Image (cartoon, rainbow, N blue to C red; front, side):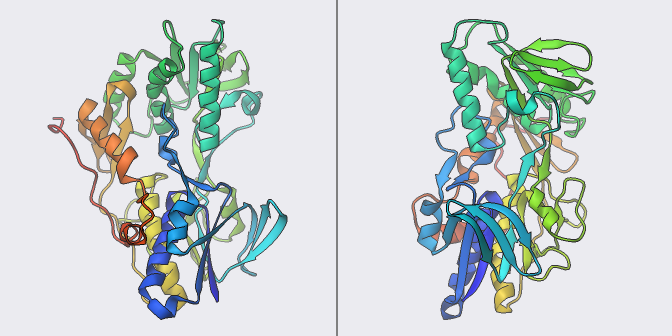
Length: 408
């Protein structure tokens, strides 16, 4: 029996596992000696890109519901180390330290928010990096809603004015209302760059600035956080912002386990993979999602998003089985790129291309964002093997739909 191990059950890992099972099923009797096993620290697949939303009721999908119907085994464990020479994985499980061997590996452990060594950050700041973290923030806001007014109670400081920080800040008016915090409130975006959305581009930035202004979201730009305490944050400008809620959204980095492998990594710590999702010079090792970087159109590396993680996972799953069976593999190529940024009650922003030309804005773009977040990125939930396999075909979806007239 040959074993394929998929590490991680996020967007890349889940679809790698389903894609591998699909390819194994297509092989018929020849695939019966292939075991596919998924390891994750959680018993669920997190629709991570929805962790900023006010309603978290549908963002954690039980793995048995998705993997049992297709014959993929799964276990809970924290990956401590990977030995690509011995082809062994060191895990910590509920039973203690364990070692898991593999014949082929798909590394899909994703990314994590970067947490610099700032005094008080670990103790007092929240984030939306994981489902558990999002729930912790949700519970905190609900507790504030039940508490008596006090300094900083209705002030939210969001650190990091990139994609995640903007979406967190823009959703916060609805989240505060949901928590029962009404009346006077402040939402402040803090970033060391001189502009909001420094990497988003000149075309999109005016739309974002308009949306933030309409939502009464303040900014503190060109400044850094020097310390965090329960009562607020200190900036290097000398300003102290009284805030009982500080949300850290300042950048992402690939899983530290990527460092287990020799070879090149990019500035985000991602392993470089070829069009088949193979890690260079490491036979039997594939990588997909936020832990991997692939030049999917020959010019641009993938970005950390489910837009790339899902197809990377599907192709990695197909190819890892093909590689094990000595069959031809399929290269991944994606010739389009879009960005759909949620801007809360104002709407959203839809851009096309790597220079992010604005396509639609406001409620028209919001309809696209909701289609993505609530339908497009979800696996079939009915327990049908046929539906799961159809969704995991090694193909690239067309761009998401647009609604309303394009913005001129």
